[in-house]
Amino acid sequence: MSGSKGTSMTQAPHHPTDIGQPFWEGLARRQLMLQFDAVSGRAQFYPRPQSLYSEAGVQWREASGRGTVAAFTRSRVSPPYLADAVPYVLALVRLEEGPRMLARIAAPFETLAIGQAVALAWEATGDAPAFPVFKPA
Image 1 (tube, rainbow, N blue to C red):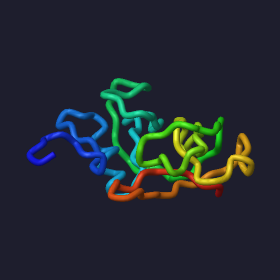
Image 2 (image 1 turned 135 degrees about the vertical axis):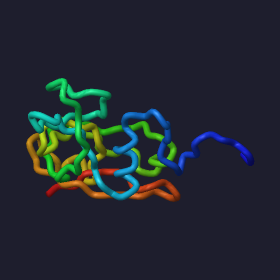
Image 3 (image 1 turned 60 degrees about the horizontal axis):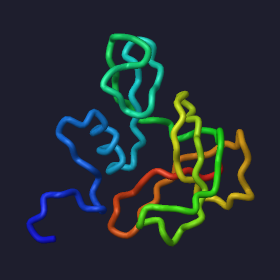
Image 4 (image 1 turned 60 degrees about the vertical axis):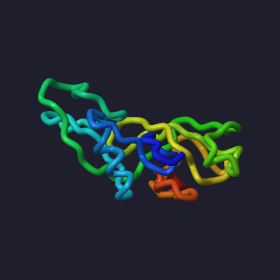
């Protein structure tokens, strides 16, 4: 729609007061950014306005991109840009830094196992920016 000020499906959401903006900016650079407690160094995900572990605040740092599969399932529904991928594997990945993240796994369902090592990969669909997926390590 010409003249529309809304966010298109090909752009990362932008909200001036969005505490997750560093996360979205990292995705544009193909970096998985996490918040870390300023005192203990413990990581947290999803982005929050404060640390879960202290009152000292958070610092943004790039994650290693390594993790293990904590749980997984086949998804038979998708956003429009993944319609051709249905069914795909959706997994709860425990990142090396500690927090868990829901993410797509780019591997056949039958080849995966709980506890399996995975590594971050990037996948772009059409005009959409690259988004993190994981592959067996």
